[in-house]
Length: 65
Image (cartoon, rainbow, N blue to C red; front, side, top):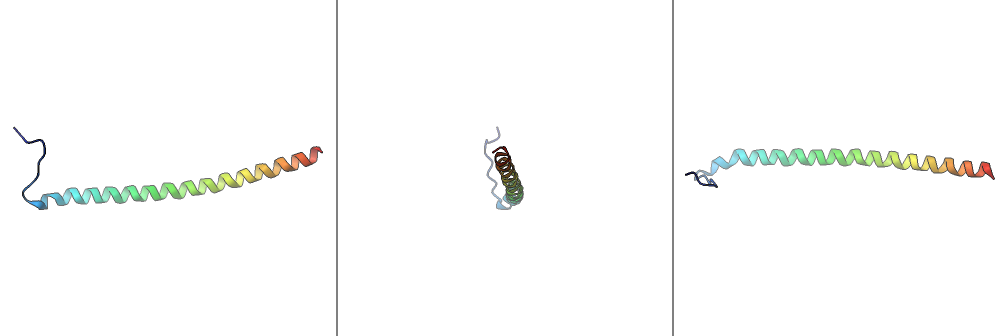
């Protein structure tokens, strides 16, 4: 019967796993930064649009007076 957890005697067998986990962490960090950057751009667009709508509403109110 094989053991549930396998801990190798030769510690160099951990290197491929360590390399893959480091690569995964780096890719996740890059994805996080890209999403954050895109979100910031979207926030700026929404803020500009909101100001434009607010300005048009004020102009419309002034025209109706």
